[in-house]
Amino acid sequence: MNLKTTLPVLAGLALISLAPTAFAADKAGVACTTPPAMHCSGADCQGALIGETGNTTVGGRKFFLDYPCDLKPDEKVVFILNIHGAGSIGNWQRHYFPAMDYKEKYRLVIATPTAATTATMGPGGPDVRMWQPAADDAHLQTITDLVLEQFGRQNIKSFWLAGHSQGGMTSHRIVCSDYFKGKVDGLLSLSGGRIGQAPIVPGFGPPQADGTPPPARPRSFGEGPPQACDFSHIYETGEREIVSLPETSPWAAKYACAPRVRRPDVIDEKAGWVYDTARSTYPVWGLKARPGTAQVFVYPKCQDDRLVADVVRLDKGHTEGLEPKITEELIQMIVAAPGGKAARGG
Image 1: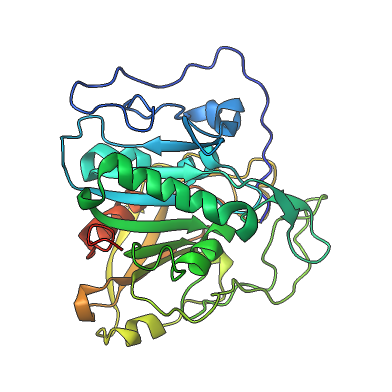
Image 2 (image 1 turned 90 degrees about the vertical axis):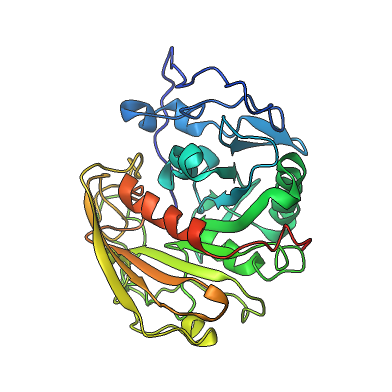
Protein backbone atom coordinates (compact mmCIF):
# COMPACT_ATOMS: atom_id res chain seq x y z
CA MET A 1 0.00 0.00 0.00
CA ASN A 2 0.98 3.63 -0.30
CA LEU A 3 0.34 6.09 2.50
CA LYS A 4 2.01 9.23 1.17
CA THR A 5 0.22 11.97 3.06
CA THR A 6 0.67 15.70 2.73
CA LEU A 7 3.02 16.88 5.47
CA PRO A 8 3.11 20.69 5.46
CA VAL A 9 5.60 22.30 7.80
CA LEU A 10 3.71 23.66 10.78
CA ALA A 11 5.49 26.38 12.71
CA GLY A 12 5.54 26.22 16.47
CA LEU A 13 4.20 22.71 16.94
CA ALA A 14 3.87 21.92 20.63
CA LEU A 15 4.86 18.40 21.61
CA ILE A 16 2.39 16.86 24.03
CA SER A 17 4.48 15.89 27.03
CA LEU A 18 4.82 15.98 30.76
CA ALA A 19 7.93 15.79 32.89
CA PRO A 20 9.23 12.26 33.57
CA THR A 21 8.16 10.75 36.86
CA ALA A 22 10.61 9.75 39.55
CA PHE A 23 10.06 6.01 39.22
CA ALA A 24 11.57 4.98 35.90
CA ALA A 25 15.11 5.76 34.88
CA ASP A 26 15.43 6.80 31.23
CA LYS A 27 15.53 3.82 28.88
CA ALA A 28 17.72 3.88 25.76
CA GLY A 29 18.17 7.62 26.18
CA VAL A 30 14.41 8.28 26.15
CA ALA A 31 13.01 10.57 28.84
CA CYS A 32 9.57 9.07 29.42
CA THR A 33 6.55 11.34 28.94
CA THR A 34 2.82 10.90 29.43
CA PRO A 35 1.09 11.55 27.05
CA PRO A 36 3.88 10.19 24.85
CA ALA A 37 6.24 12.62 23.16
CA MET A 38 5.47 13.60 19.55
CA HIS A 39 1.83 12.56 20.00
CA CYS A 40 -0.30 14.32 17.42
CA SER A 41 -3.82 15.61 18.00
CA GLY A 42 -6.36 16.97 15.54
CA ALA A 43 -4.76 18.99 12.76
CA ASP A 44 -1.27 18.01 13.97
CA CYS A 45 -1.97 14.48 12.73
CA GLN A 46 -1.98 15.78 9.17
CA GLY A 47 1.12 17.94 9.74
CA ALA A 48 4.87 17.72 10.11
CA LEU A 49 4.71 16.04 13.52
CA ILE A 50 3.43 12.80 12.02
CA GLY A 51 6.57 12.68 9.82
CA GLU A 52 8.92 12.37 12.81
CA THR A 53 10.85 9.10 12.77
CA GLY A 54 11.88 8.57 16.37
CA ASN A 55 12.78 9.70 19.87
CA THR A 56 15.92 7.58 20.16
CA THR A 57 18.53 5.92 17.95
CA VAL A 58 20.13 2.51 17.60
CA GLY A 59 22.66 1.57 14.93
CA GLY A 60 22.42 5.05 13.46
CA ARG A 61 18.66 4.73 12.81
CA LYS A 62 15.91 6.51 14.71
CA PHE A 63 12.88 4.75 16.15
CA PHE A 64 10.21 5.41 18.76
CA LEU A 65 10.34 3.86 22.21
CA ASP A 66 7.32 4.30 24.51
CA TYR A 67 7.07 2.79 27.99
CA PRO A 68 5.33 3.38 31.35
CA CYS A 69 6.70 6.44 33.10
CA ASP A 70 5.99 4.93 36.55
CA LEU A 71 7.78 1.66 35.76
CA LYS A 72 9.13 -0.04 38.87
CA PRO A 73 12.41 -1.93 39.01
CA ASP A 74 11.98 -5.50 37.72
CA GLU A 75 8.31 -4.92 36.84
CA LYS A 76 6.87 -7.23 34.19
CA VAL A 77 5.92 -5.63 30.85
CA VAL A 78 4.42 -6.62 27.50
CA PHE A 79 6.65 -5.71 24.55
CA ILE A 80 5.09 -4.81 21.18
CA LEU A 81 7.17 -4.27 18.04
CA ASN A 82 4.86 -2.04 15.97
CA ILE A 83 5.66 -2.27 12.23
CA HIS A 84 4.25 0.15 9.64
CA GLY A 85 3.01 -0.65 6.13
CA ALA A 86 4.54 0.18 2.75
CA GLY A 87 4.61 3.90 2.01
CA SER A 88 4.15 4.73 5.68
CA ILE A 89 6.46 5.78 8.51
CA GLY A 90 7.00 5.08 12.21
CA ASN A 91 5.00 7.92 13.74
CA TRP A 92 2.04 7.28 11.41
CA GLN A 93 2.00 3.64 12.54
CA ARG A 94 2.33 4.75 16.14
CA HIS A 95 -0.98 6.62 15.70
CA TYR A 96 -2.62 4.06 13.38
CA PHE A 97 -2.33 1.41 16.11
CA PRO A 98 -1.93 3.68 19.16
CA ALA A 99 -0.86 1.16 21.78
CA MET A 100 1.17 4.03 23.28
CA ASP A 101 -2.08 5.51 24.62
CA TYR A 102 -2.37 2.50 26.95
CA LYS A 103 1.25 2.05 28.01
CA GLU A 104 0.65 2.91 31.67
CA LYS A 105 -2.67 1.08 32.05
CA TYR A 106 -1.45 -2.20 30.58
CA ARG A 107 2.31 -1.90 31.27
CA LEU A 108 3.41 -1.83 27.65
CA VAL A 109 6.77 -1.23 26.02
CA ILE A 110 6.27 -0.29 22.36
CA ALA A 111 9.03 0.07 19.78
CA THR A 112 8.01 1.61 16.45
CA PRO A 113 10.69 1.77 13.72
CA THR A 114 10.76 3.08 10.15
CA ALA A 115 11.89 1.06 7.12
CA ALA A 116 15.20 2.15 5.63
CA THR A 117 14.63 2.34 1.88
CA THR A 118 12.11 2.44 -0.92
CA ALA A 119 11.19 -0.26 -3.41
CA THR A 120 8.59 -0.86 -6.09
CA MET A 121 5.25 -1.99 -4.71
CA GLY A 122 4.01 -4.55 -7.21
CA PRO A 123 4.28 -4.65 -11.04
CA GLY A 124 4.23 -1.11 -12.37
CA GLY A 125 3.61 0.31 -8.93
CA PRO A 126 5.26 3.36 -7.37
CA ASP A 127 8.43 3.32 -5.32
CA VAL A 128 7.46 3.49 -1.63
CA ARG A 129 9.19 3.01 1.70
CA MET A 130 8.81 -0.65 2.64
CA TRP A 131 10.40 -3.40 4.68
CA GLN A 132 13.12 -5.40 2.92
CA PRO A 133 15.04 -8.31 4.46
CA ALA A 134 18.55 -7.13 3.60
CA ALA A 135 17.96 -3.56 4.73
CA ASP A 136 15.74 -4.08 7.78
CA ASP A 137 15.75 -7.53 9.38
CA ALA A 138 18.96 -6.90 11.33
CA HIS A 139 17.56 -3.53 12.48
CA LEU A 140 14.41 -5.14 13.88
CA GLN A 141 16.60 -7.64 15.70
CA THR A 142 18.84 -4.88 17.09
CA ILE A 143 15.81 -2.99 18.44
CA THR A 144 14.58 -6.18 20.08
CA ASP A 145 18.00 -6.81 21.65
CA LEU A 146 18.01 -3.24 22.98
CA VAL A 147 14.56 -3.61 24.57
CA LEU A 148 15.48 -6.93 26.17
CA GLU A 149 18.65 -5.37 27.58
CA GLN A 150 17.06 -2.13 28.78
CA PHE A 151 14.00 -3.64 30.44
CA GLY A 152 15.47 -7.00 31.37
CA ARG A 153 14.77 -10.17 29.42
CA GLN A 154 13.37 -11.71 32.60
CA ASN A 155 10.79 -8.92 32.82
CA ILE A 156 9.27 -9.46 29.36
CA LYS A 157 5.93 -11.04 30.19
CA SER A 158 5.21 -11.48 26.49
CA PHE A 159 6.45 -10.21 23.12
CA TRP A 160 4.16 -9.46 20.18
CA LEU A 161 4.72 -8.39 16.60
CA ALA A 162 2.04 -5.96 15.37
CA GLY A 163 2.17 -5.08 11.68
CA HIS A 164 -0.06 -3.11 9.34
CA SER A 165 -0.36 -4.15 5.67
CA GLN A 166 3.16 -4.90 4.39
CA GLY A 167 4.26 -4.63 8.01
CA GLY A 168 1.89 -7.50 8.76
CA MET A 169 3.34 -9.48 5.86
CA THR A 170 6.80 -8.76 7.27
CA SER A 171 5.66 -10.00 10.69
CA HIS A 172 4.40 -13.23 9.09
CA ARG A 173 7.74 -13.61 7.33
CA ILE A 174 9.95 -13.16 10.38
CA VAL A 175 7.88 -14.63 13.22
CA CYS A 176 9.34 -18.13 12.77
CA SER A 177 12.81 -17.01 11.71
CA ASP A 178 15.76 -18.30 13.71
CA TYR A 179 16.01 -15.04 15.68
CA PHE A 180 12.33 -14.41 16.50
CA LYS A 181 10.79 -17.87 16.85
CA GLY A 182 12.15 -18.35 20.37
CA LYS A 183 11.10 -14.87 21.49
CA VAL A 184 7.74 -13.92 19.91
CA ASP A 185 4.59 -15.04 21.71
CA GLY A 186 2.02 -13.52 19.37
CA LEU A 187 1.35 -11.84 16.03
CA LEU A 188 -1.26 -9.12 15.53
CA SER A 189 -1.91 -8.70 11.82
CA LEU A 190 -3.48 -5.30 11.10
CA SER A 191 -4.87 -5.79 7.59
CA GLY A 192 -1.66 -7.66 6.85
CA GLY A 193 -2.70 -11.23 6.14
CA ARG A 194 -4.53 -14.00 7.98
CA ILE A 195 -3.37 -17.55 8.54
CA GLY A 196 -6.19 -19.12 6.59
CA GLN A 197 -6.58 -16.36 4.04
CA ALA A 198 -9.43 -13.86 4.17
CA PRO A 199 -9.73 -13.07 0.42
CA ILE A 200 -9.04 -9.44 -0.51
CA VAL A 201 -11.65 -7.67 -2.65
CA PRO A 202 -10.66 -7.53 -6.35
CA GLY A 203 -10.65 -3.71 -6.32
CA PHE A 204 -8.31 -3.43 -3.35
CA GLY A 205 -5.72 -0.65 -3.45
CA PRO A 206 -5.43 3.13 -3.37
CA PRO A 207 -7.57 5.17 -5.77
CA GLN A 208 -5.99 6.33 -9.02
CA ALA A 209 -4.75 9.87 -9.55
CA ASP A 210 -8.19 11.03 -10.70
CA GLY A 211 -9.84 9.55 -7.61
CA THR A 212 -11.42 6.59 -9.38
CA PRO A 213 -11.06 3.06 -7.97
CA PRO A 214 -8.08 0.96 -9.05
CA PRO A 215 -8.55 -1.75 -11.69
CA ALA A 216 -10.29 -4.82 -10.32
CA ARG A 217 -7.90 -7.72 -10.08
CA PRO A 218 -7.45 -10.60 -7.62
CA ARG A 219 -5.29 -9.59 -4.67
CA SER A 220 -4.03 -11.36 -1.57
CA PHE A 221 -1.68 -10.84 1.31
CA GLY A 222 0.83 -13.66 1.27
CA GLU A 223 1.17 -15.68 4.43
CA GLY A 224 4.79 -16.52 3.69
CA PRO A 225 6.18 -20.01 4.29
CA PRO A 226 4.23 -22.50 6.44
CA GLN A 227 4.54 -21.40 10.05
CA ALA A 228 6.79 -23.85 11.87
CA CYS A 229 6.66 -22.36 15.37
CA ASP A 230 4.05 -21.62 18.02
CA PHE A 231 2.41 -18.27 18.67
CA SER A 232 -0.97 -16.66 19.26
CA HIS A 233 -2.57 -14.92 16.28
CA ILE A 234 -5.03 -12.03 16.00
CA TYR A 235 -6.20 -10.91 12.57
CA GLU A 236 -7.80 -7.45 12.30
CA THR A 237 -9.21 -5.99 9.09
CA GLY A 238 -11.60 -3.45 7.66
CA GLU A 239 -14.86 -4.95 6.40
CA ARG A 240 -14.48 -3.23 3.01
CA GLU A 241 -11.05 -4.82 2.38
CA ILE A 242 -12.16 -8.43 2.30
CA VAL A 243 -14.72 -10.49 0.42
CA SER A 244 -15.66 -12.30 3.61
CA LEU A 245 -14.17 -13.58 6.86
CA PRO A 246 -13.74 -17.37 6.96
CA GLU A 247 -15.73 -19.12 9.68
CA THR A 248 -12.87 -21.51 10.41
CA SER A 249 -9.16 -21.13 11.00
CA PRO A 250 -6.30 -23.55 10.29
CA TRP A 251 -4.38 -21.88 13.11
CA ALA A 252 -7.24 -22.64 15.50
CA ALA A 253 -7.30 -26.21 14.18
CA LYS A 254 -3.56 -26.51 14.91
CA TYR A 255 -4.27 -25.87 18.58
CA ALA A 256 -7.51 -27.89 18.68
CA CYS A 257 -9.53 -24.82 19.60
CA ALA A 258 -13.30 -24.98 20.00
CA PRO A 259 -15.52 -23.43 17.27
CA ARG A 260 -15.36 -19.67 17.20
CA VAL A 261 -17.63 -17.53 19.36
CA ARG A 262 -18.65 -13.95 18.75
CA ARG A 263 -18.02 -11.53 21.57
CA PRO A 264 -20.12 -8.39 22.07
CA ASP A 265 -19.45 -5.79 19.41
CA VAL A 266 -17.03 -3.00 20.30
CA ILE A 267 -18.67 0.38 19.66
CA ASP A 268 -16.42 3.42 19.35
CA GLU A 269 -17.84 6.93 19.54
CA LYS A 270 -14.45 8.50 18.78
CA ALA A 271 -12.41 8.32 15.58
CA GLY A 272 -8.87 7.03 15.27
CA TRP A 273 -5.94 9.47 15.10
CA VAL A 274 -4.91 9.17 11.43
CA TYR A 275 -6.03 8.27 7.91
CA ASP A 276 -4.64 8.64 4.39
CA THR A 277 -5.45 12.32 3.94
CA ALA A 278 -4.21 12.37 0.34
CA ARG A 279 -6.51 9.56 -0.87
CA SER A 280 -9.54 9.27 1.38
CA THR A 281 -11.97 8.93 -1.52
CA TYR A 282 -12.25 5.17 -2.04
CA PRO A 283 -13.95 3.17 0.75
CA VAL A 284 -11.92 0.00 0.16
CA TRP A 285 -8.71 1.94 0.68
CA GLY A 286 -10.17 3.98 3.53
CA LEU A 287 -12.11 7.18 4.13
CA LYS A 288 -11.64 9.86 6.76
CA ALA A 289 -11.14 8.50 10.27
CA ARG A 290 -14.46 8.30 12.10
CA PRO A 291 -16.26 6.36 14.87
CA GLY A 292 -17.23 2.77 14.22
CA THR A 293 -18.24 -0.71 15.33
CA ALA A 294 -16.08 -3.83 15.36
CA GLN A 295 -17.03 -7.50 15.45
CA VAL A 296 -14.79 -9.74 17.56
CA PHE A 297 -14.54 -13.51 17.05
CA VAL A 298 -12.46 -15.76 19.33
CA TYR A 299 -11.67 -19.47 19.09
CA PRO A 300 -11.82 -20.67 22.73
CA LYS A 301 -10.20 -23.54 24.62
CA CYS A 302 -7.03 -23.69 22.53
CA GLN A 303 -4.17 -25.94 23.58
CA ASP A 304 -1.59 -24.21 25.76
CA ASP A 305 -4.13 -21.36 26.15
CA ARG A 306 -3.14 -19.95 22.74
CA LEU A 307 -5.17 -17.02 21.51
CA VAL A 308 -6.68 -17.19 18.02
CA ALA A 309 -9.04 -14.34 17.11
CA ASP A 310 -10.47 -12.32 14.22
CA VAL A 311 -11.62 -8.70 14.38
CA VAL A 312 -13.61 -6.97 11.60
CA ARG A 313 -14.13 -3.21 11.73
CA LEU A 314 -17.43 -2.59 9.98
CA ASP A 315 -17.64 -0.11 7.10
CA LYS A 316 -13.87 0.51 7.27
CA GLY A 317 -11.15 0.17 4.67
CA HIS A 318 -7.40 -0.27 4.80
CA THR A 319 -6.11 3.02 6.20
CA GLU A 320 -8.44 4.45 8.86
CA GLY A 321 -6.57 4.51 12.16
CA LEU A 322 -7.91 2.23 14.87
CA GLU A 323 -10.42 3.77 17.24
CA PRO A 324 -9.66 3.85 21.00
CA LYS A 325 -11.99 1.14 22.28
CA ILE A 326 -11.07 -1.46 19.65
CA THR A 327 -7.40 -0.61 20.21
CA GLU A 328 -7.90 -1.32 23.90
CA GLU A 329 -9.82 -4.53 23.15
CA LEU A 330 -6.87 -5.81 21.09
CA ILE A 331 -4.42 -4.86 23.82
CA GLN A 332 -6.52 -6.61 26.46
CA MET A 333 -6.40 -9.80 24.38
CA ILE A 334 -2.63 -9.46 23.93
CA VAL A 335 -2.02 -8.90 27.64
CA ALA A 336 -4.20 -11.87 28.62
CA ALA A 337 -2.53 -14.28 26.17
CA PRO A 338 0.27 -16.61 27.31
CA GLY A 339 3.85 -15.45 26.99
CA GLY A 340 7.29 -15.95 28.45
CA LYS A 341 9.41 -17.08 25.49
CA ALA A 342 11.93 -14.24 25.77
CA ALA A 343 12.10 -14.53 29.55
CA ARG A 344 12.91 -18.21 29.19
CA GLY A 345 15.93 -17.33 27.10
CA GLY A 346 14.64 -17.70 23.55
